Length: 176
Image (cartoon, rainbow, N blue to C red):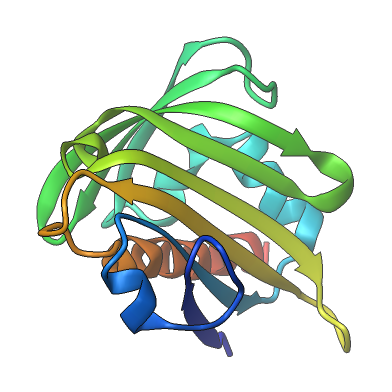
């Protein structure tokens, strides 16, 4: 059973606060999702096999293409085709950081639909072993800067990442 915990924090503190962050242009939101797959399996999917993600959640992600570089390498540029809030969207991202020892990968938006509303948009995922039992906790962190105060905080995008994580987990843990 997957569980979800979303928190919104200001960029200058770890205090959970939607009111403080709602008046700022910059923000950070985070979510944890419990999965059955191992941290390594989940990390591998986003690091070395993101082009396979659409097979696990085609209703959300239609494809991922390698534009520059090499799968699993920092500096690689990839393009995602996905559906968010009922609309087809595109995201061109730079793989900014990979830490296999922490099962961590960071993507920075460099072109695409997110930059129509956000000056910067960075998503980091880290998969860690659960404290008890098998499985993992996937921790998503989204750091962003809105173009103006009329732009909403990206909670629906964070939920999209959580939902995609659950679909990927179901694929990774299905019996052969």
